[in-house]
Image: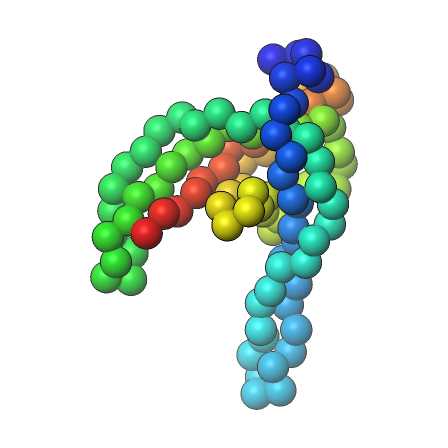
Length: 105
């Protein structure tokens, strides 16, 4: 995909923030970076058990306009849906192809 008109979904980009918890550990939370246009395409789904709960993992391909600050410590949110980044590939400094995983319980 190279047509910016296909970026038809608004996703919230969030970054991981770690704060000292006072007991030698850290508390992790996410902070909103920006909202951006993206293309979201489901790819595969599989059922599995995590923490003794039956659920499913759904992989997605997300395409956004190129940005140089995106890392695997970021995630995307669409309402209650969370997409964890698995891989980021640059395409001719115009777009980023992102492999992401969504967990449903």
